[in-house]
Amino acid sequence: MNFNFPLLRPIRMLLFPFSLIYALIIFLRNRLYDRHVFASTSFNMPLICVGNLSVGGTGKSPMVELMVKHLKGKYRIAVLSRGYKRKTKGYALANERSTALEIGDEPMQFHVKFPDVAIAVGEERMVAIPQLLHDRPSTQAIILDDAFQHRVINAGLNILLTDYNNLYTRDWFLPTGDLRDEPGSARRASIIVITKCPADLSQEEREALTREIRPREYQRVFFSTLQYERPYHIIHRDTRAITTDDEVLMVTGIANPRSLKQYLLEYSRTYYEMSYSDHHIFTIDDLREIRMKFEQVTADNKIIITTEKDAVRLLKFEQELRELPCYVLPIGHHFLFGEAQSFMDIIGNFISTYKR
Image 1: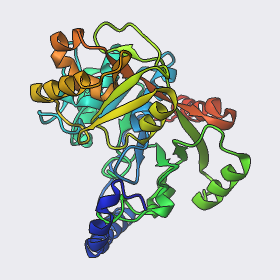
Image 2: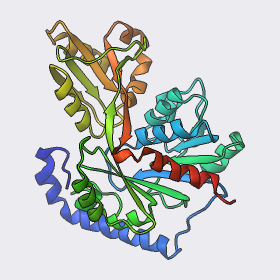
Image 3: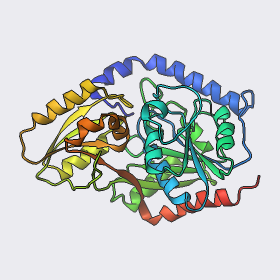
Image 4: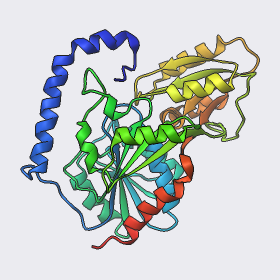
């Protein structure tokens, strides 16, 4: 089990009876869908679902970005997200005036990176998909971000992500563990990606992990690691490397910053941490606190590092950030064992051979 904060472990263990109740509810819900008591809606076009079975970060956003980057030159792709923690409700299609508060930080991140791709949000995907197709009738495929556990939509291709450090096979239901769906739901996936693997994962461990996942004959298991790219200034966009002379103030509001911490431990002199809750909406008081903490760092070589997801929630403070050395650290998936093309081929073949 993955207890994100060690001090919470005893409390989460005491909540085990609630986990049993939650597990029963999820089990009954899935059986009702399996027996078609609850209906799943299919659409006459390729729908690709990217999701996981647990709460917390498994790398869904970088995976969606990777897919969009490779597919947008061949197909007219759209992305539909829920828009978690936005301040609006209902369906919305991103435009040049959109903000993270209106559409959510992850959709805003997609929109900033891929302004020519249709990025939409909507809590009720069954309603949002027809609206998206009305707005962009030339769409050839839709990527459903974080929709694996939402069975009201029946996607043609399901991609399930699971964290190497917290495989769904070793986890337990909320609130004792991190699972929000039962491990058996993995059977609905066509592709299972074990993310955040060590870059030097051995063939022997690959085979052991595959045996643990126990893929069915129709499933493919892939392995990926997260790779950080050159940081860029949040406003000016100029780049610089992190060196072992740098002291870093890490500012994050994401579910699982473990990989970022490991990266800074390796590549910087030291780092100081300011962690906020996942999808935290930064205020001017937060910015003052960040500036004060940064000024307390006495090193000559010092910078602020944040994630791309956090950056879209900080951009509203453009004037204040211009004078600060606040850099964004991009991240992306790198497939191990030379299987990146195989992964993309499965997705491309699904779209190109889809029969309406």
